[in-house]
Image 1 (tube, rainbow, N blue to C red):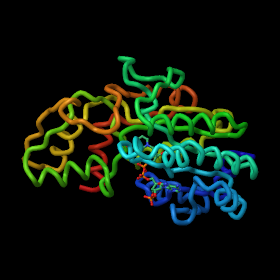
Image 2: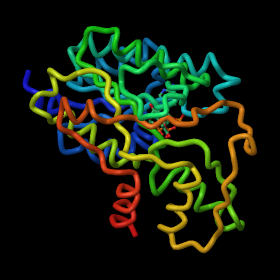
Image 3: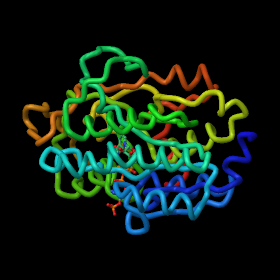
Length: 290
Ligand SMILES: NC(=O)c1ccc[n+]([C@@H]2O[C@H](COP(=O)([O-])OP(=O)(O)OC[C@H]3O[C@@H](n4cnc5c(N)ncnc54)[C@H](OP(=O)(O)O)[C@@H]3O)[C@@H](O)[C@H]2O)c1
């Protein structure tokens, strides 16, 4: 079946009320009927519920934006994180296979330990430092082990102008005075709209069916949380100091990689898709909605 027909047949979007899910619902709307499923509509950790939903909708494409994303809480809730992030994607992959659908699934830069010293490529060794990263690695493995047309997109530091994320947190906390932000963890902040548009570009690509697999899909370039916070403060025109602190100054339940920058060369090489630099993407977001 031609690539465009898969989406035209219908898109089942799981996790539709998360920050990425909401962006996907908008951006994929023109491709075909988008059936949005919230957590309440379908628990992806429930195999029977996943199969029932997919049998009912018979989509051409399944997009999974559902995940357990509480990185620190996952340390104490390993079973729940595994149920949703490791087993859920396997159920979705089986369900996709049963109706001949493609599957788009998202993973994370936190599958890496952050010691590479250069942007990570898809075939670099994974070595997650925390339970969330471990659960996400198992999820991507579950999808890639099944013989289906699946796109697993590893992304990073997702944010939007609304909802709960680093950008909105910085804005809220800036009202209370100087911010103290970690300056020794590096990554690539990526707006959910950019990732949703990347997903769309993959689905409409004429050679998509031949290019299934694992891809890094985060904005180009890198910064620290401190650098990102400074850029956010500037974008909002706020007059507040952003003070650098170290990871050691800000202990959290989960360890995080010091440098989890993703190399996007494979996506460019196979599908000709590039993502903007993280600072351009931030500027674009403020151009769209000043
Ligand atoms: N956020 C980041 O910085 C980041 C970085 C790298 C990769 N990613 C990956 O990107 C994807 C999207 O993340 P996001 O930031 O959009 O996450 P999010 O805002 O936390 O949204 C996740 C959604 O999944 C839903 N959900 C949770 N458990 C579920 C279950 N068992 N069944 C069905 N739905 C369930 C949540 O619903 P409830 O809230 O009602 O539970 C929520 O609507 C995920 O795969 C995530 O791992 C995110």
